[in-house]
Image (cartoon, rainbow, N blue to C red; front, side):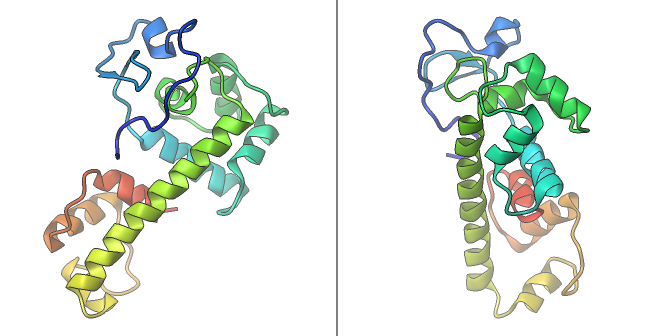
Length: 185
């Protein structure tokens, strides 16, 4: 479900997750049984948006990875953080690295990034589909929905305005910040 790790770890026995290694508090067990700090989806959505701004909305995240790191093989945390920082990206790198290190091997490769892209795109489609279904079942046309959200057709909503508008129109959403990220590509 939303907000939970989605892939089982493979090969966790020899290497505990990075968050546990560096001594940060863990709150939620990973599917593999290791303790893992509860992560926000925000860092991975930030990276997805940054990659799309850098390389186009329909870019292959794996190819962006290969371009950034000059190869397709795995990179460790230090290289991951350093190369992204050098290119102007900033985020909670530790949470992001943990999110992308689905295999718990303390490295991220091109194939990991491609698998993550499929997950991001699936979450985007599902979130937008639910909102669209709600709007279609509640409103006779888009103008009526915009009006109830306090905007005119063609107006822009900030993230805070979007979250308030969802509450105003009665749309229940587990993570409205995440939904905004899916729409604000």
